[in-house]
Image (cartoon, rainbow, N blue to C red; front, side, top):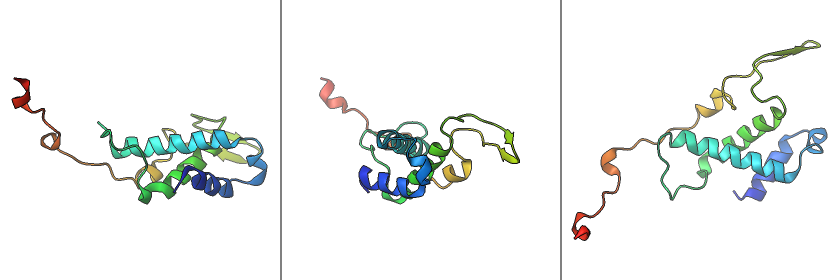
Length: 122
């Protein structure tokens, strides 16, 4: 899915009155941040340099995370809030753990890393 397609899908999931308060550029930034959260979850220690995009199987989760980021805009880090019968309480971190649990961390071994060629050292 291209960034433009992700933007369209995200805008379809945001109520019209909320879309007027946030620009397309801001939404694209939130989509990128959601992608970084996914990649950081997938590669908690070291991300291979060739991994720069969210795998297709996680693109829908990327949109769901971006929706959460949009909904929390202005209330980042809020732990509890009660007003006129509405109660808000966010989980720890910037995104709900239920979404992050859907992302499988990549497992590897130190032996699978490339080792410099000792013959070329001279």
